[in-house]
Image (cartoon, rainbow, N blue to C red; front, side, top):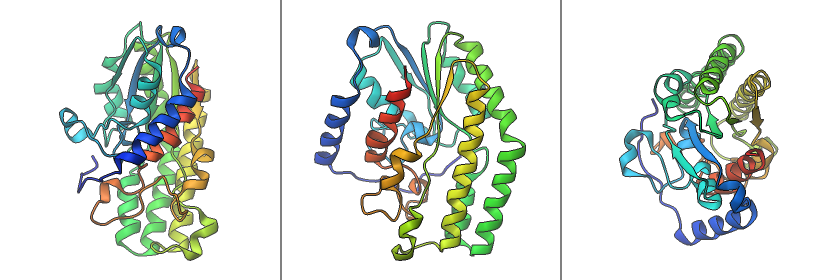
Length: 272
């Protein structure tokens, strides 16, 4: 489970502008949305850790009002919507405590999952706090897990979702690359080797997610990397929190803009 160190404060004016932009471009026809029963599952990238405006009743799950599920639901007014996404969730958590939110009437499911199974939060901390050699070893171990063990866990998770919501469209969203490597030379922080390794780890995870989606009926993999490409760490308008030892839990997570302008449009295009 990711440990929350501190909160992030965002500009209200920027948030209102971003929400208005996405609402204008992503809303589906009211008649279509009114028949949608939508449930959001997954980890911190779906709960909104790092996006501010946290819902107090969500506790350590760090559900925000700003992540893509809430933003899509606000723009499209589905017949029903609930998010049970939780920071730190693994595939086991989804199967054991989240899929119960689904039903035969659920028509749309979103999920981000797999990063915590592979231990990428601890990998990130290793890369931030220890040597480059330690970082490279940690990423290599995580990639080995992704290749050998994660596929079966993802398949079991998608099967559990399908069993609880047999008619639902499942949108399995990926994770963005962390760094714009083309600008790494002028960007303070981790070494170039660390950054290359972390991006490669994210790419390996996304490849596993894409393959899992291909093997699951009525499931689509939604790749967010192209959307985030101009807004990675080292870019002037990054949609990802950089490394912050005072806010380790938010590091590498999408900002409010990353959720609203990064994840939300990608989900909207794949929601059907």
